Length: 506
Image (cartoon, rainbow, N blue to C red; front, side):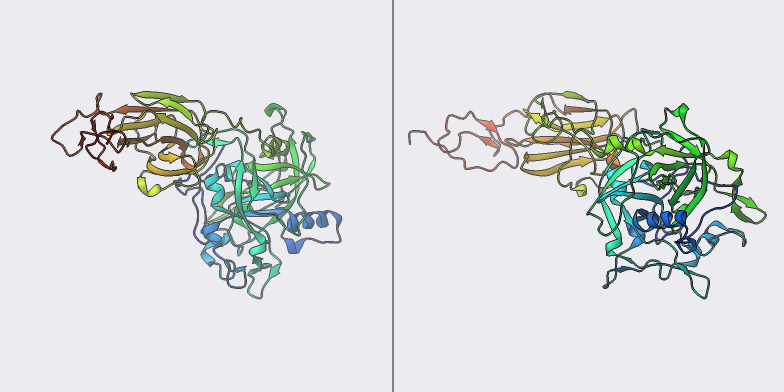
């Protein structure tokens, strides 16, 4: 089952299972465990003359990346070097943070990362989807090479290679069918395919099975990742305990020594080909007297959940809906008659691409996200001067109104969670007053890039337009130049045009 939610730490602060759910619903799966002996090893403990260790070294140096919150990583200095590990706080290190007993491993190691990933192409990464299941979470992450231990100084503190600008990458886009709702329930397959902001030079991506290759009972496995946020650890003592027939070969179980933070770790066969992604497991630590120790279980109890990596193939080249599909874009917006009350059922808000930018200052304190896929609706025949109330219900929606042409849109109104629906976190824009001669578009999305089915409703506050009042300055008795045949009208408050009494023939 999916486990404890976590929140972004500051400067690598410990993320514990007791941390409260963050506004952005950053989640990790249940903590993991050691089976038999603790086989985790650091970079400096590997022997390059041994063929198995040489394979692990090649993967670690070329393909293994840590998820680190961008805010924790900080910015590079004038030399292009990230210095976050130079003076890492002692209280954030593993021993003090977990209250580990003195005989435990890695006591002085920092806990900087929160998930693991594997480079599988020039600019593509595979990881666990619960780490970055929407664009907002992906945008918060840095994907980092060189987070591993090269040795220790005279004080027993670990040493690291430099992490430079060339070792740090960011998220351009994320593709996954995994979703979490506002209650933390999930659906879809827990695997994600990420496109980085640029190509990775000078490193060799890992290879992976693009079709199902079933594991075999007691098959030997290699896993490399960042357990509990620690620098990279190589774990080569795990074996398959269940090949996953009862899951339809979506996932299998193994006795890999994995912890929270290993989520997304690549799992490899003896040839170094990636066969799976670590996503879930058993409890990490247990109490022993007044301190904590690693939870050790027999190898036969191995229950770490690993997604078969071929499941990512459907995400690598997703088939987009036809460009003409209503709702996919501003140009292909679904047109509706807005001259009276209306209701629109949207089957899936993930159909389209959102506007180039949002102005969240128009709806402060409503939890408006402004990210991810959307559905576009074009309002035809709006009633100028009449207050229009808009509501979306169905899931944790974002609702926004844009005006103008598709080539020159400006945001007019928005809302995150003000709606009163039977489900939580609906959106509502009240008392919106359309202007004359203006085209309006409704954009329906979801907080944090969430998507789903939703219903948009629109109602006017009065059934009839405001009656003309000949004594008002807003009552136009005759029309604009060369348009004297216009009927007298009740002008909009902000309407500006030349007004004169005239005759077309004069």
